[in-house]
Amino acid sequence: MSLYDYEIGRGYASQDPPFYALIQAAMRGADTRNGVLLRNAFPATWDELQARYNAPGGLLAGETSLDELARRRRALADEQPETDSSRSLKED
Image (tube, rainbow, N blue to C red):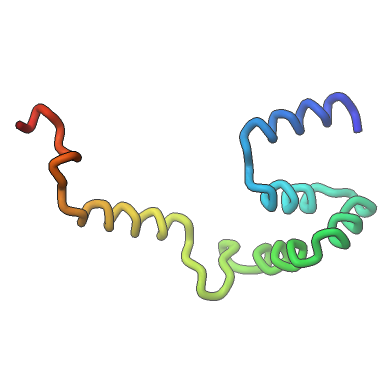
């Protein structure tokens, strides 16, 4: 590992990405030797990465896209009745 690698790793760690996001990113960018090591250490992650790579939009059977989930959350939030504590003081 070089100082450059170390500093880049610090930058990623400061963003607090999910562990498996880092592992799959490492798998995508690994050379042959390191790819084998990662596949052997995380076989289920490798299998899922391959499945998602070959699936339209990375979606596996029965999954909903992140955009669709966000749209549903917004719609649910819009349907929630306003409570007294959620009103601003200007409305009183």
